[in-house]
Image 1 (cartoon, rainbow, N blue to C red):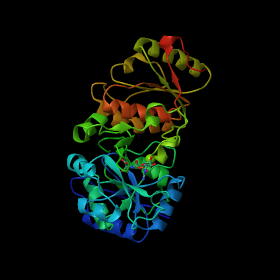
Image 2: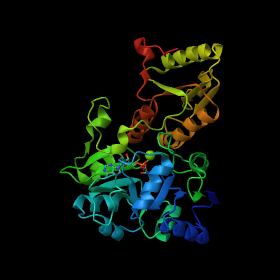
Image 3: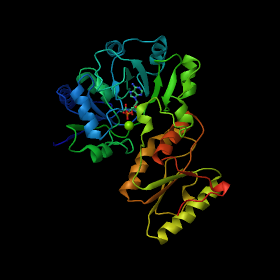
Image 4: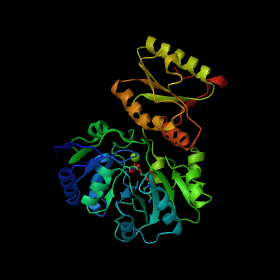
Length: 357
Ligand code: TXA
Ligand code: MG
């Protein structure tokens, strides 16, 4: 298959190209497109064959459900069997935007789209290209992130192309995304609302609207052995090809340990990458030192994270060392993705721990 590559500006989506992309989806084809979080790999959410094609193009296990993207609030009534009052409040506060809500599904949504579940994840993105495409495609686009399964989610179209060229009918390049981490997922199908995946819309923001909000226990203690409630959260994710380790604790100890390991790696013919911040970037000596941004602007770090992990691959880096992030809501979401990318490998030089050499 030859993949058409279309570049457009979010401020003025090209109606002719959007119309063609919408028809592709209506006919069962796939289109990668920008959203405000990450690029999505879109197909008709109501067509079981389209969902099968999405799983195949991504190389994704088919028990991992897809998010259904809408462009009008009233359309949600068609795909869910019940709208709890909390959903109404969240929609008013955060939609369109980077929030996904889980509902009980209606019969219109095929099980292929929901990975066999009776629930459906729904999101109303704010990106105007995404909205125009959803409308042109008939109102319901199933879209996981537009990466091959296990790879970092694409925040620029170049990486959709790298993963999906020849596997989808079209890629729409709408520039770099604004947020860079996937949407927050909240489950509203049980008594109290539960966050299944952290994101830009943090717990505090949700609690201001809803009152108490729980967090899926597996996000707090990932090694508990309990299955996460969002099936996709159990898989290794975002992994760069190089081996990634996160260093925690006092900054000067972290820097010293990384520089030592980088020197060792160089002596043994291995390339080292460092993922750090503006505050420390001049203090590292390694083949590739990349700042994700300043710690005072977590959004800049969120936006850069997945791109930098991909760039280390482009540069064929063997070993990647990352500073850790904490702090606000976004800091937790950043750390959640980084920990997954590292397969939870962390080292605390301040406690005498050493990087494996
Ligand atoms: O920001 C985003 O959400 C992006 C853009 C493209 O919209 N999409 C995205 O999709 O991140 P994906 O497929 O990469 O992640 C969807 C997550 C998975 O962890 C999946 O298991 C979970 O949502 N999920 C989907 N439907 C669910 C359901 N019914 N119940 C629980 N978790 C669900
Ligand atoms: Mg994904």
